[in-house]
Amino acid sequence: MGKRFGAPTRRSVLTAALAAAATAASFTAGCTRHGPTDDGRAPQSTPTPSVGTPAPSEPQATGSVLAVKIDNVAAARPQTGLDSADVVYAEQVEGGLSRLMAVYATRLPEVIGPVRSARESDLELLRQFDRPRLAFSGAQKKLLPLIRRAPLRPESPAEASGAYYRGSGRAAPHNLYLRPARLMDGAPGESALTTGFRHGPAPAGGTVTTVRTVRYPAARFAFTWSAGRNRWLVSMDGTPARTSAGDRLAPATVVVQHVRVTKSAYHDVLGNYTPFTETVGSGKAEVLRDGRSFEATWSRPEATEGTTFTGADGGPVNFADGQVWVVFAKA
Image (cartoon, rainbow, N blue to C red; front, side, top):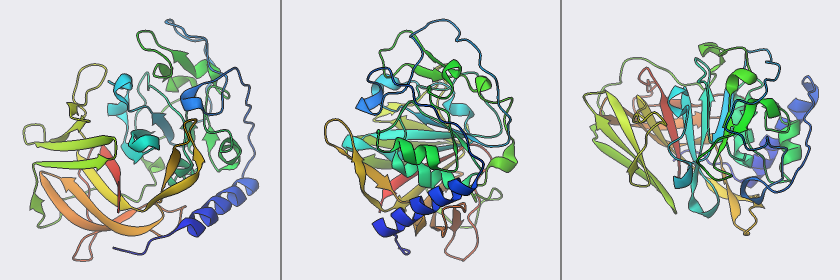
């Protein structure tokens, strides 16, 4: 296991984020409040529930990735637009449940969701991108000031009400959806994916792997290799994961990244503390591609850098072309 970074490092990372934000171009982040919303966190102005198309807002310039916090409890499935993401991050949240962050750079689907709330860990994870847009439904009220001062563009319903709508057929809070075309003129392109990932031929060796399962206290992910599709079929909590169109979620590469998970200063209305997933530092990882598992070491020395994966021979572990899932597992 590589060097780990504890709470002081996390605080220094967030301090650096705020310092960088202070010197960056300023932006307005309004916060009109109208009653309780997501998980009892700070209320945001949300559109009136609607089945129709929301009123358009003015698209903004492209150039940065779009990161969307996506609900992942049973009531939120199947999700919409998840299969169009370039990278999907899975993290543990309160109560041992899971939540996803989908990152879009090469294509934008018509609709993404259900959209849910942001976490402290997101600020560190997103530092690797240049002023990313973060679409989220709200956040713990003490976290909102940090989000506004971080070097990113917050795109909650408070800032971009015309880009969101409430879908029919599901109860709130599992029915908030984003139309990304209301935020951006188009996908920024592959160059915006400053993740540090390398794509190319598979490394030598590896262990034949048919299924890999990652468990959280109250959630689990399973990835089953499909030789016919040359992809890893995703299951969540024992159920095949599908898109809203009925297709299986199937990334080309899956990374199980072993990280330190600590208790943050924030908690939900039930008093459950939010886990903080430390993505700056180094540690062990497993890279799954082409029906094999490759042991690796991950490294991200600074928050503003991407994450590299190195094999036992000291060379980079290349990913397969296609969607990447990164599941953060407790070291």
